[in-house]
Image (cartoon, rainbow, N blue to C red; front, side, top):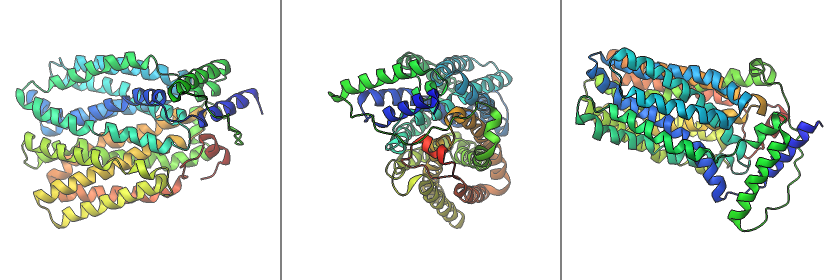
Length: 456
């Protein structure tokens, strides 16, 4: 075993003995707050796009393209950002992206016309696109295997509440005046400032440092984490456990994502990411524009969006209790897809506004579970060296699906009504369900164990 492998094995063992403490929660939540900006973007743009379209006197379809171009920016950011995180560090990248996103959000608030806003949305999307795969990699790397599934999903269960909160803000702010939608961007940009300062105290991933051969720094960061945890629990940590898994060390190369075991994984994950996030954006972000296209007022469409956001937040809780049980990642995804299909079928059979409200809330919850599971499950299956790169590439596919969703949603609603929208949702869900059987279950398994066995 090489020195790098020995250090990595030591770091793994030291992470595995950590209990949940105030410091671990602080580190986890402050880093994970980056998801707030993702939720803020997708929820805020669902509320803002129709209003901005009216301000700039463009069509509903052109307004929905503001969502699409933001997501295309996220696609570009994800495609390059994961590799940047693998090369230069998780912390460095999520500090840089936060500055860029916050500044561009504030500038967007002053957009003088549709074209300028269109360009700014693309640039903002690039920074956010880098942020999310970096966070997915980081959060999977700093938690012990026995609790990784539960606490990762706790974070999503918390942050999902920002979706209805942002929709509620939209209901309050957007109607104030024809230009009031600009305040939503100001709120987002200002929120980034205190988070940037809080993130200064978040440690770099010890796993990443060990993989990069920065052995002393990895041990120092790990020792600092342990000191904080011991201070929180008021005693010494248990002895370092013996880890029998030999870490699998691969090259840092984009091509590694498409070779051998990684390549087989990527063949399944690319369409899963694409379809999962197509479904999420289709039923949550694009919903207001879809309803406006069907003749609903902006206020009524935002109300339905708020109801769907509440459904997503409430129903995002079950994975906290299933991810680390025998149900696991795959089982959690399967039950969410089945419930989503049943709810969509009920609306198709009984197409009333009341059923739309209830079915929409349930479907929003299920596609949220579906996407939250993918956030965690995908990065777990790749080796340390290419985790960020692979997650970025897969997330680029996710953003492609997300970018397509608003346009497909509005056009489908225009030509085939809401029944057509739900039929597309069912087809997407069935394909994803079949693909989920092509990737390994990862519940309560050390990340390196998953790769060392090299089993699909």
